[in-house]
Structures are given as C-alpha cells and as structure tokens.
Image (cartoon, rainbow over all chains, first blue to last red; front, side, top):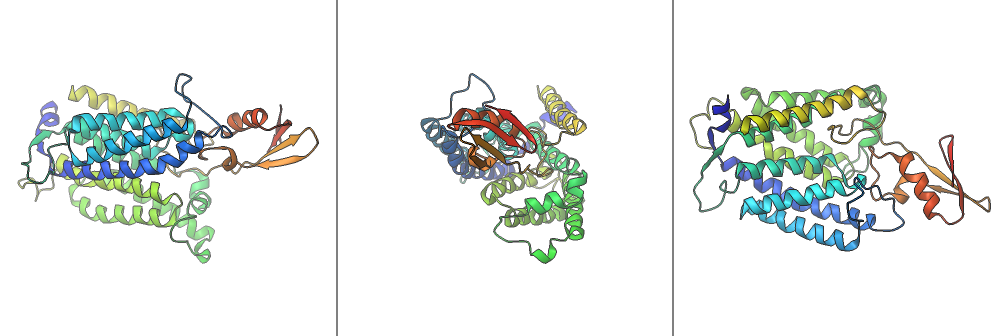
Length: 266
Length: 99
C-alpha cells in the first residue's frame, strides 16, 4: 500500500489541474475584493473567527487581494511553484480565518487543492518546452479523494425533508444567467429535480473510482455544474467551483488508470 | 509520511462532516461540505427607536455577505444596538432584545 502511494506517476495532467486551479483562484480573488471592502465598512457586522486576527480594513483588502492574485497567476504558470503555491495557500487560509462572512466551502476546497497540488510538486507538469517528470501518487490521490468527499457529503446533507420537497432548490435556483420557467416551478418538478441532484452527486462521488464509468461521468459532471452556473446566483463563484472540480476529473486516471491508458503517457 | 498524511486527511475529512450530519443543525455548518442543502433563513429585524419609530433591517443590509451558515441572531441584534442611533429594542420572529 505504502509503495503504491509513493509510486511515481506522470505529471502532465497534474500540470493541467494546476493551471485550472490557479486560474480559478485568480478569478476568486476578484470575487473576494467587494466582500472584503464591504467588511471594512464600520456599519457592517464583524464576526471574527479569532480575537487576534486583524480588523478588516481597506488596506488589508487590497494587500490581500493583490498578493492572492499575483500568487494565483504565478501558481498557474508553474513558476517557482513551491513558493507561490504556499503563498497562495496562506492567502486563502487568511481569507477563511478573517471573519465568519469570508468563509465559503468553495474557498476551503480551493485551499486544500492548492496545498495538495503544491505538495505534489505540480510545477513540472504541463510547461511548454519542458520535459514531463514523475511525482509521488499520494498528493494526487488526496485531490481525488477530496473531490469525492465534497460530492458525497453534498449529496448526503441534501437528504432532508426541505430539500427533498424541492423548496430549498426552488430558493437556490434564482438570480442566475438563465431563469427556470415558472411553469416548471411546481412542487412535483422541483422535488424530482432535488432527487436528480442527490443521485448525480452520489454518482460523481463514487463513480469516478470505477474506470469504465469515468468518461460518461465527465459529461454528467459537466452538465451538472454548467446548469448550476446558468441557473444560480453568484455566477462567478459557482463557475470557480465548477473549475475546481473539473480540474481534478482527469487526475482520477492518474491515480487509477483506465485499462487502455495504463501503458500510455498521460 | 505519505501514509500518515493520508490517515490524518481521511480522519478529518470523514469525521467532521459526519459529526455535523449526525448533529443535524437547523442551519448549514462550515467545514461540512453542506453545499446548498439548506435554505438561508429570511429573518428580518425591526429596530425600535426611542421615539417609537420602527425601522426594518434585513441581513443583507448589515452583513458583508449573507450566508446560510451565519448565526444571525447572535450577530445582528447586538450590532444593531451598538450602531443604530437611538435604538431601544430589536425585534425578530417573535423574539426581542433590549438595547
């Protein structure tokens, strides 16, 4: 088992993941700026996680977002990955810790994926003109496990009366780029949609570990996340979440290659 | 090192969300991957001023970012008492707090 964990695997797909995660982190920095600026307003509620954390201010907002943005872009390029990866991780942890209002599940997921990709040494993967090298399997395994755990608990926690009735979903599917027609906002349809969401998330959580289901699930996951991006408010943040999940999809093939791929370069 | 980190990771990432699921809190909780599984409460607060005038405040008016996992009752009434000039009482959903 331990040998399997440290066995070297090619990094080309990890490099792609790094590129997508870094880009998502850069976009998320821009989403964070208005929240941080509003938090610095004295008329706005402060809910610090720790008493010793600095009081939110305009200076902190701009410094944090600037550092976050620069480190995200450099992380994406793979340049000095072992420095910028940890700087980006520190920015994300600071944001998560600053205030109850600056937490988000997407940000928490992003911080963990950046940490694991940095631990994996994702820098060598996918850089034009450079040779691919191998890295240990275990940090890539952690990234895949993390995505499966997110899908699994997202599904399990939806198994409650309010969600299954469709009421929660009817509230969530509002304010997006596309509007769900009123004709479809019936209890029966919303309840069916709620069930589909749970089954889809459970399928994505478990199915990626079965190699023959993996390719069809790419399409299922793409449809699922794109519909969320289209129908839900906070479009940019939902799109960033989708990018994080998509970034990891190809890594399941690295951790557990499909039979046709086990002897090919990826 | 790899085995230890994997064990710690699985321990935290499986136990924390599981405990939160078992606890079954009314509002969603952080670190539990409870994504869009529970609605955000649409609580409105009424600030009663010394003059008897009443002002309605929504969470969106005073929060940097309303979220379903925020303890609104713990956060908003004390804030309104501290920042609303002349506030004597805050009312919400059949409950109240004297300033």
